[in-house]
Structures are given as C-alpha cells and as structure tokens.
Length: 173
Image (cartoon, rainbow, N blue to C red; front, top):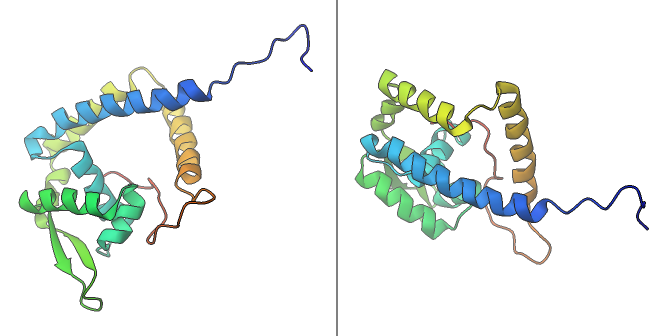
C-alpha cells in the first residue's frame, strides 16, 4: 500500500547499473590516452595494479590475479603476455607447481615512480573526478568498495573461482 501523499520512489538501480558501464567506457578510453606514452592500455595498467598492490611482495599466479582482476584466466594471460612483450612483467613457471604460472613485475614498473607519471596521474584524476569534493570521492570509493564485495561474491548456482578475493585496495601501481 502506498501513501497517497508520497508516490513510490522509482527504482534507481537500472540507471545506476547502466551508468557504471558508460562511465567505465569513458574511463577506459581516457586511461588509454594517458597511458599511451608508457605503451600501456588501461586493462594492462589494471593488471599491473593487481600484481603490484594487491599481491605486494609475492608474485601471484595467473589464477589468483584473474580472480582479483575479475576476468578469466585466459583473458588475464593474454593481457599479461602484452605486458611481458612491453617489458613490464615476466610470466614464469612456479617452482613448486609446474602447472601454475606466476606474474613477476620487472624493473620497468619504476616508470610509475617518475615525476612525469605522477603529474599525468594527478591531471587524470583531476579530470576524471571533475568538481567532486575529496569527501565525495571518499564516499564514492567506499560505496564502490562495498559494491565490489557484493558483485565479486559467488551468486547462488555459479561455481566458485579459485584464487584471491576481489578487492581494489591499493589499486594504484
């Protein structure tokens, strides 16, 4: 029963859901432009962020990286091969499990520590978040983190993926 003075609130979920994909498309395109001088795509940058931040100090297996990245092992392997060709990663066999491959960052990732990269990154974030106040960005980051925890969980009837849980904690390479 609805209150005659307060009409039902429309369901914002379809608009929010679609908007995330549109924003992702724009961010992907923008990231590709900003990352071009490093010879990277946004998808490659994200895989490097997973390897360097989520698995800091321990090279992940392809399966572990895929679980956090949110994609199939085969897709992550293709992205990793591109990063290997560009000199940012090495794909090496695991010493203890010959079936597993690990992703090892190379010294080339030091490019993300260069002042020029920091300036480009600052400009990217300023543009991408526009006039949102830092408090609003913090709220957005918190909401997205909570949402990621929901969507990365295994829905009923869907087989579990092996590997690390998905997270965006520290996703900056």
